[in-house]
Image (tube, rainbow, N blue to C red; front, side, top):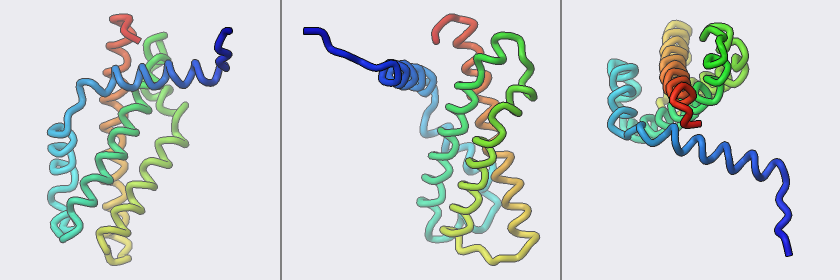
Length: 147
C-alpha cells in the first residue's frame, strides 16, 4: 500500500528543511550580541525582566531572519532588496509591532510618546537588520544552489 501525502505536507517539509539549513550558521551568541548592541542602552533591558525581553527579541530576530531568507529567492532572480522588501511589508510590520508591544508590556515602560516612538524605531531597525541578514544568507544559498 502506498502512503498518500498531500501537496501542503510536501511544501511544509521542504520549508522546514530549508529553514534548518538557513539557521545552521546562526548562533545564540550572535543573537545576544545584537540585542545588546541594539537595546543595551535602553533602561528597560536593565530591569528584572531583561532575560524575558532578550528571549522575546531572539524569537523576533529568528522570524525576521527566516522571512528575509524566504524572500531572497526574488533577489536571486534579479529583483533589488527594496522591492523584495515591499513584498513582505505586512509580515515585517507584524514582527515590528509584536516586538514593540512585547517590550512595552514586559519592560513596564511609561506611556510617554517620545519613549514609545524611539523604542518603535529601535524595534524597526532591529527587525530590518535581521531581515537583511536573512536575505543575504538566502541569496548566498541560492547562488550556491543549496536551497
